[in-house]
Each structure stands twice: as C-alpha cells, then as structure tokens.
Length: 370
Image 1 (spheres, rainbow, N blue to C red):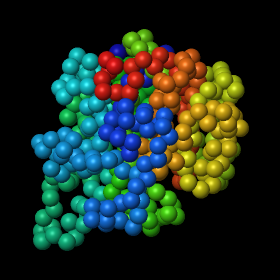
Image 2 (image 1 turned 180 degrees about the vertical axis):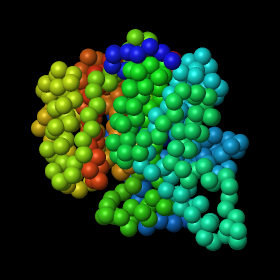
Image 3 (image 1 turned 90 degrees about the vertical axis):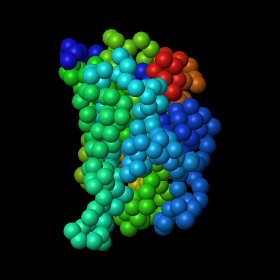
Image 4 (image 1 turned 30 degrees about the vertical axis):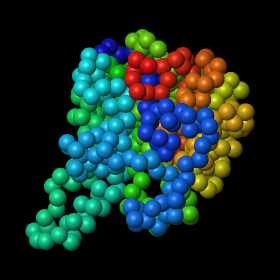
C-alpha cells in the first residue's frame, strides 16, 4: 500500500478498440478525420431488428486472444482483455504491473447476451436443466474486470462500476480515489459496451427504441499519481456527478460543469476542448446547450461529436469521449489548456470531468513507453 496523496491523478497512457478499428491509433485517426462508421448489419451474423450498427470491424474474441480460455468468453470481455493488453504492451506481468495495480471498469449491466444465454438454457435444456457451467461467470457483470485481472496479472483492487453512459468518468474518479487513499500505486480505468443480439432487442423494445443506431467499444486509461508519472497526457482536475429527477437536464449539467470548474478555480472561458455525450432526444440536446453556455461553441467544435461517428456506445461512450479529447489534443498545441467532458443518461445520471492537457508525446497506446 502506498502513502495517501492529495495531488490530482494523471493519465499517462490509453488504448481503445472501436468501430474506427482495432487499436488506439485507429481510433485517433478516425476522430481526426471525423469518419462515420455506420454500416449495414449482416442478418446472417446478427439476427437483430437493426438495419445498421457501428461495430468493431472484424472483431472475433478467439482470433484476437487465441483459443485458450476464450471458448465461452463474451464480446465485452474479449474487447476489454485485448484493450488492456494493448495498453500494457505485453502478454506477461512485469515490474510495471505489480500487486499495486488496480482496475476499475465501467459498464451498464455487464453482458446482456451472456445473461440471456444462460437464462434461456435454464428453461430449454434437458432436466435437470443442464446449463453450460462455463457460462455462469459471464452472467455476472463483474466478470470482465476479473478476467482482465487474471489474464494480465493485475493484483490490486478490482472494481466494476455500473452507471451507464457516464461509467467511464465514474471509473476515472474511482481510480483517483484509490490512488489518493494509498490503496493502489497505479490504476487502469475505463469502460466497455458490446453490441449483441440481446442488447439490440432490449433497445428495440425499450423506451429508447426510436430507431437510434447502436455502437460498441472500449477505452482504458493508465492513471497514476502525478508525483510518479514520467510523461502525463492529462491531469484529472475534477469530476462531478448529479442526478436529474425532473427532466431538466440543462440545469443539472450546468451545475455539474460549474462545480468542476469552481473546484479547479477556472472560468468556463478557459476551456479549450469540450465534448458532450450526444445522448439521444431532449436530454442530449439540453446537455449540449448547457455545455456551450458554460464553455463555448468554439470549444465544442474542436472535438468531433462522438455519437455522430460511432453512434450510441452505451457505457463506453464517456470513456471514448476522453480518448477523443486526448486524440485531438495530441494533434494540436493544447498543452496547459483545459477540457470538459460531459455525459448524460436518459435515466437521470449526469457526469462531468475536467482535464488539464499536458504533454502529448506518448500518443495512443500500444505501449506505456510510447
């Protein structure tokens, strides 16, 4: 256990697997190009009501990770294990990944597909309901974080945080707390969402089943104390969370942004990059208007709106927003400037993260060494 610290945590590396491609470099390139990824869904592979989706191109768990240990691994876990491997840049633990490395992963409910597959087997298989035992762990939402820890030798605190679209920001906040209280030397933090037949049908029959396109992806960040980080990409100055109970998302988003800025002692006019979640409907419209009011339209215009490019990435969306901000910052003279990321979930969750952009040399991940 490390000593308690009061310094703000920093992001020192990141990885992403997204509809732009299989790694962080593909993600950064897609963001800078403003490339849309919506494509027709093959009904032979995906018996879903969707005609289009934004999928990670060609991703297959076994092809990405090998046959050993992946026979029943779900898509969300495969995406996350692969992204963590890219970030760490190796297959086996080293001194950099010690017992002091924590992992905090954001999700919505885990894998809806795994839960429904197991439940269905318990109804239709022969008595005494001979379900596939290897599916049992994947029906629990914390299996992805646990499998990543086992796969990559992460022996610090292991946590799953289910807060929907703001889950990436929640994970970053949690990682910062682990570092501040001395419970970890460093932490991996991020969020994942898979596309699946079950998720598609749940969306189709749910209150948001309005024809919106679904996406998927994962983004993982290395978070470290500022005192031990050699080359930080960004400092996490503040995170704020609120709950909207009356539908007035604009007011709640403004409160969250202003509270984050006040904590850092910064005016909204100082914000250089701003990224709204692009949530569908009135909640997303109110979020964007509030973000523009507190910061500026210019700040929003510097970051391509992620939802327009990779659609509704669910729990992964706010983590991918952070990656998008870092991608833009890497290609612009942004060192020393600030960025705001907001996220809203139509169920009422609201979150805001405030970053100070630092040195952008390391770039997106294949390795912590650049």
